[in-house]
Image 1 (cartoon, rainbow, N blue to C red):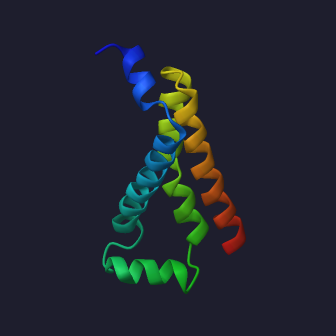
Image 2 (cartoon, helix red, strand yellow):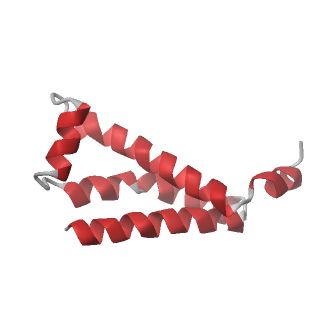
Length: 101
């Protein structure tokens, strides 16, 4: 399959939103053992949500995956529509970070 056919099929803003959400969730799951190796996932979530310990730091770490995919889709593959979806997801998460802190 040629790259042009892939672009027509996958270059959609909705796919960018899905990639952005999944990349952020993967970033959150990677930050869990790094930041709080001994606590459960529920305890980690409560630590962030209720106590506010490093919440913006962890959420910012979650957005690094979006940055990686934005570089891949926008600069390398020139898929503009999927990049728009990534930007929307990132802006929504950034607004959440600003409102929580």
